[in-house]
Image (cartoon, rainbow, N blue to C red):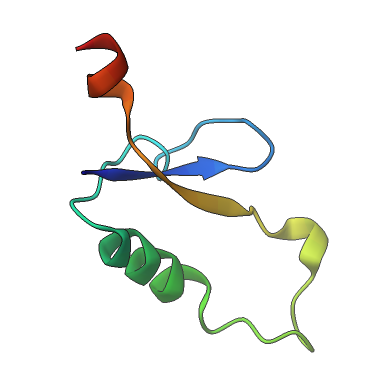
Length: 62
């Protein structure tokens, strides 16, 4: 099973183009990029939100 990131706003970017071998790899990337943000210094309007989902594309279309 592979995983991918999807943006909550439905747009695509360099992160949504990637595929991950497991959930932990996707989570670790988001943690690396956004883990240092603290709720007291974050402007939540400027943050792109992602979900980690199973990449079933190859099973549906492959």
